[in-house]
Image (cartoon, rainbow, N blue to C red; front, side):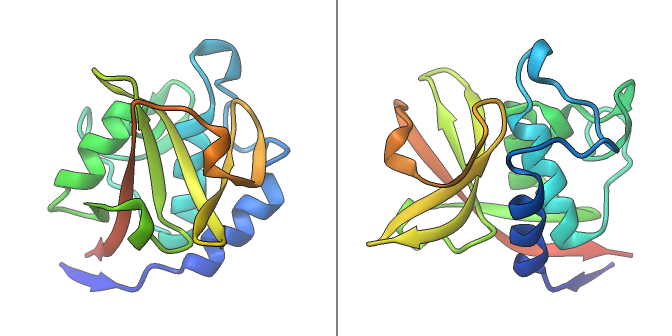
Length: 160
């Protein structure tokens, strides 16, 4: 296995194109729990171009009935990306002030992660985000409330 560079520009360009719309290649989960992590995964895939097809514990999307829980579930996304030692993206928890464009912020309600946001820029040091469910592009993180926002900094993309 080797490590390749994460293309943060591709991630942001994808978000710019699809933040306020839906890519018809992916199911829209808005009516069944929310589309935020599905959108975040699409953006991340645009910047890494590799999925982990490990059943049950991987990170992949074939269709709405054949996908990893980590593709569309916020808590599962967090679990996968912070513990992945196989193919796919890897992230570490990071202070919000140290994130870069193309990184992620997850909102926590005190017991679990429930929302995933993509960092698309900064304004006066505050992250600007893109998201689905409540569709947004380049809005300040401060418009969201959370017990604690958690930063996820993408550190590596593992490929075979």
